[in-house]
Image (cartoon, rainbow, N blue to C red; front, side):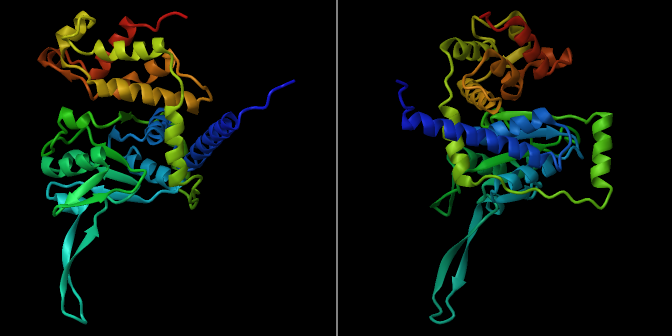
Length: 339
């Protein structure tokens, strides 16, 4: 006689099916507006399902802002955008206290006016164009999910995602993010140019009277449930060990580091890189209708997770090497173990 499925297992199966349904629908809605950039879209969605923040690096006109706004609309979340400029102050982000006078009594009181940081999805446009003091106010909120104004502590809405963009050109007058602050981002996602066929699709979409509309397919509470679901995806010890070994091999002081890492890298990834790599791999597995993490998940996400966590030295600069080149060589030198 067949035993009944435990209610917990049935509920878990239902939540997984709902997760995959929402993922499919988000992609379908976003595809009405955004052409191409499959890897970028996947990485941004992984960041949302994990509860991490994403740094998007791309040239002007690569639809960074449009992508983030469209995803926020499909998620049914409150969206705010901050255009970072050299004169932006921390209070312009967090909000400030103002003095209000009661017309009846004449009594004056302090009233907190929330800033744009009080949203579910915050687009920090060109984050490297504002001074470190303002960057720190945002990055503190990213880490603590709260902010402090005049000694008062305010919790940010949940879920809270920061999708920050930066422009790799026109670097005069910018304030590059320090490595310690870059480490707070789950991904450093790179947007490249589209193919000729995809650019033709963009022309068709944007130069006619057609206006694409996207509809929300989920809500804040459900996204929080999905984040818990992702953490429940099992990972074998051997796969987790491979992720840890990859991260440790980026540190020139580690005995396992290859010769080219010792030659070209000043500092490697922190343990946060391994944490984020495993979490992101869990989300990727679930998005691809798998219920366990594979070596391929780890290898596919190693570059966007680690590229901003590796600090190269002047030898790499003189040989015109980027962190992506080092990571590509590292993945070649450390293939996934055979089954």
